[in-house]
Amino acid sequence: MDGQRKVTVKDLVENTALRVVWGEDHLDRPIKVPDIARPGLQLTGFLNYFEADRVQLYGVNEIEYAKTMTHEQKQFVLKKMSRSTTPAFVISTNLDIPAELIEAAKETNIPVLTSSLTSSRLLSNMTYYLGAQLSERKTVHGVLIDINGIGVLLTGDPGVGKTEAALELIQQGKARLIADDRVDIYAEDEQRLVGAPSEVLANLMEVRGIGIIDVLQTYGAASIRDHTTIVLNIDLKRSNEKVQNFDRLGDAGASLKILGIEIPKMALPVTSGRNTASVIDAAALKYRTDRMGFDALATLEKRQTALIKENEIHDQTNK
Image (cartoon, rainbow, N blue to C red; front, side, top):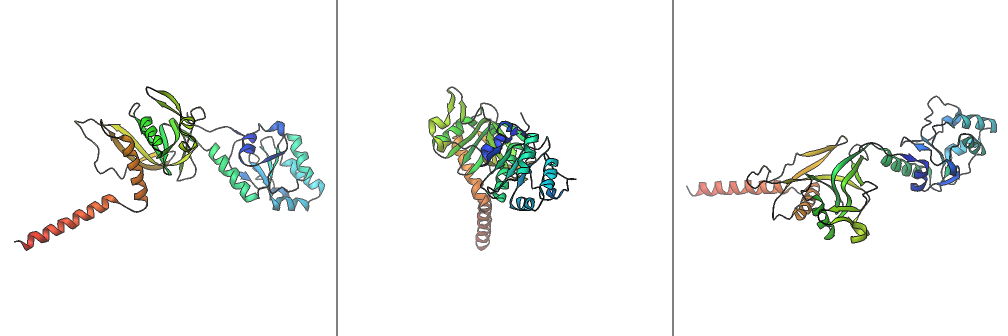
């Protein structure tokens, strides 16, 4: 199932170092957009472009400006800024909260939150969390593992051995599990895809003939991660011994497109007697060395070219 998660003010409080000043009974208010508003201009009374559906963050500048306003001015403006769609008011740096803000929030049941963090740090934390939770998501059938910091999405037909290969790498201590069977993917930005498990399947793997394995309980905390950036897709294909359609040197131009972002794709044949886990590990290491600028294929071509020239010179001298 693709789509967007539901996020409430309570979720924000629990994940971004916030404390509730007022509104414990109203933390179920939904947050529908990941952007955070800094209502400095709106405090002056300019409300033509007030983004009421955003979390409203007040920092030093906003609070200091509020101190220059009269009681009546603050009452008027803050009541105008307290809308039915406003999720919460957040005040950073343990600043003193104007009584008029609490009063306006109570009238519309908007939670008032605070934090010891600075405005910039708090803005970054909230934006990162809400961006991850509210981004469009796509569910992909496969296995997602982290091999030495490389997020590898294993895809392929059912029964091709994705889970078994991932489990072998986990047992060897070479990989950590992110998700098995169902991988929830979202775009962190215009270039990066992040994968995570569904809540129901977190830390679990289904191995044919064995059943469900709790990887956390069986192999320890070092064997799992809750998310990773996906940088490589390895697509496992059953190989017919009579018909080989795979490029022996790989297809450097292949890619997989998810949510408008392309990642490199390698098609690996699965044959009897071939250690799929070892090949996946080698493919991930090859990706790393390629990114570091070491091109094994280019090295081979250079050596072949040098050998051809050497042979041509040898043939000419022997004529």
